[in-house]
Image (tube, rainbow, N blue to C red; front, top):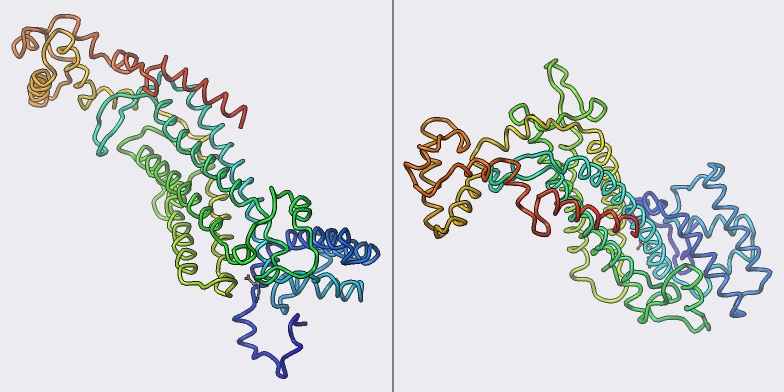
Length: 458
Ligand code: ARG
């Protein structure tokens, strides 16, 4: 059953076998392993290293194994050391002699480097499309809510009024950057390690460019030691995934706050909330909480691989087998979180009245009152002080700036006229903010157009 039994005189200790084996998790890339082997033997035949007959037999055998695994007719036996051994042994069992030529000019070191790259490359595309679905959901909400006013916060204290479109627009930009990070990683990782052998290439006249082309890579890697020792792309991917989770977690945190009884800005759909076993009135934002919570395990995967790699001499070391479980878990976690978060965001209802009322109190228009004075010739620093006095006056009476009489205004500064009310109205405060990236409807609509174009092109 072992690929390497020849020089050994004893059976491997069972615990050693268990400790060393990776089949329980590298079985996840059986498809990529077979795909890589097919490309490898196709190249071997083209180079005259393998007869066409043998190649045909191997390719047919590998395709049979693939379809039997997928149909469930062939079970991946957990007694094998890894997926590579399983596929090769099954092939030999099925087609005999030619199967023994599959591993010509190849090592498991370049094979596993290839499999992991092919697997993560596919997953990068999947995660990107999940991000796109989230962006599609966000842009829909943005289009519907360019006039849904709400408070914008700094220090979680009400700061200035914004719109829901603007708030969601902030996350739109974050997830757009996440997609661009993924595409950078894809571009950088898309070179083929196969044909690097164990570490020093091979003496067979392999055509590495051809194998790379067959597998959709931009070309072969340029150093055989680096090929088998490089896990940078895993680190970059886990870093990008951590950033995606950080964004999802911040968004989740806000949804949890908005969904609280005190805020009441949003109502989560029943299908996306859960109840309590004891308190009948409860409807909990568990999905958002789980997304926030799962962020930790993705960060953990990044820290773990960085630590695994830091002291490794060139070239291959078995330590690198530790890249798989963590990366698979991180990928599955991110995919699950993206899909559920998107569903939750798409079905959430917004309580416009509550949001608007909240934007109105808490002096979110104080800056605009100061700007009003500036427009009348008062230096900004003086205006800031005057409005501070107005706020103090209002706090004492539990009223808003909008509720003060003109006499009360004038008692603090004679510069105030009747047009102050218009100047500090919620609508004015938002709509006058028209610079690129600001919440005013006009500015926001331009940004939405740009982002819709981006979505149609990417
Ligand atoms: N399971 C191994 C890994 O994931 C495959 C490569 C084994 N190579 C070796 N020389 N033992 O890294």
